[in-house]
Image 1 (tube, one colour):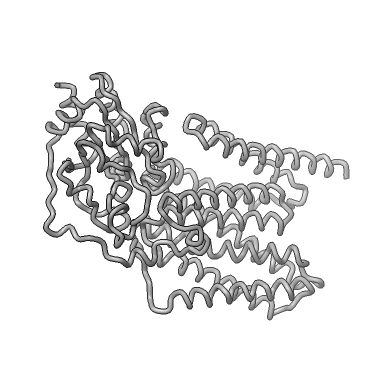
Image 2 (cartoon, rainbow, N blue to C red; image 1 turned 120 degrees about the vertical axis):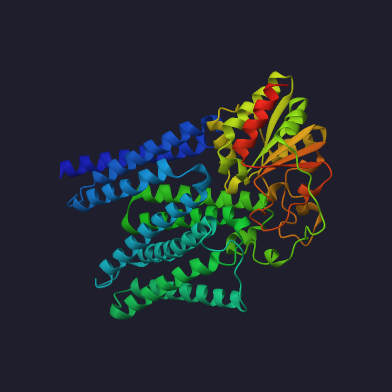
Length: 474
């Protein structure tokens, strides 16, 4: 008995330490210069949580735990080491899917454990069991759909059909109705096969909800979707903690759910999506169906690396706008070298970061930090937007929708009202792109056709390396 009490004390101490590390880790992620330490603290917190769980006296055998650790490590290590930064949104979606799958399986196992026990699981436990299974199941399929849209094997355009909203509402209400019925019946006693059927149907309906939730959402809105699914997964994990009596799951899930929800709100604001859109997953559906202006009859002006070097090398004030094109080409080191050359020649260089540049918050910041770009050179949209009018050259590296003036002047555009970087206010604009493909919103960028804009076509890393060489020779 004493040994069990000591073991339980160690478990709770480990959980308290893990909770503190998670909170401090999140705090560290609020600033670029402390982000690495924040991630390290979060990793230490996870290690403490695992140790605390392994010390639980209720564990009878470690056989399946060891198998799980081996399989999880075999999957997780390659995902962490081999997946490029350009695929981080997809990887995060897959992580949510695996986490939600674990939560759902625990919910199913717990329900099967209690359904034949007289008295049932009780009201509180049944509420937690149903909630974790409902949200876990919809997060599984929702995350898979988001992964598919980001990866490209599912169309990034909104998929709609007549009566879709009514069908979605019916499926959702059906799942919630079964959930409420299960709480009212299972909490008062076992219901045998009837309860099992209701639970199974609720789970299937939740899986369908995950598909219908993401299907009508366009690729331009996927960052918000992934963030919202993160919140759902966290809430489901927290409910699992209540269901199985695990304090660290409650804390970690609550932190994940709350931070994901707050991030969804901030991102929806950055993309001009309303609070109701975030709550009900309706973003991108209606506006994406509106046709944008055609580029027919408009022309672009191309520029060579030599010409671009002449303009950039003699500029006094340069603002660089990194985007997905820079991430795809892994051109951050060439960008940093170019920025250093401009500064050596007496120019000033700043980086303008849109909140959702690269399809996820912080994507550009991480890439530029990897290339040792000073933190004080990075500026958010609100900080830099008024400075473009005094900018000699704005260098845009694959950022498409976040620089599109249509967001301000075309009410028919699906991105109308979205805050953008005011690149069009610069004296000259040079856009580095592989070709004239549209961005995630699937519309033409009016910036490319302005008289002040020149297109530098090619792989960002390759053409910027050429520009660097030419600037060195000026």
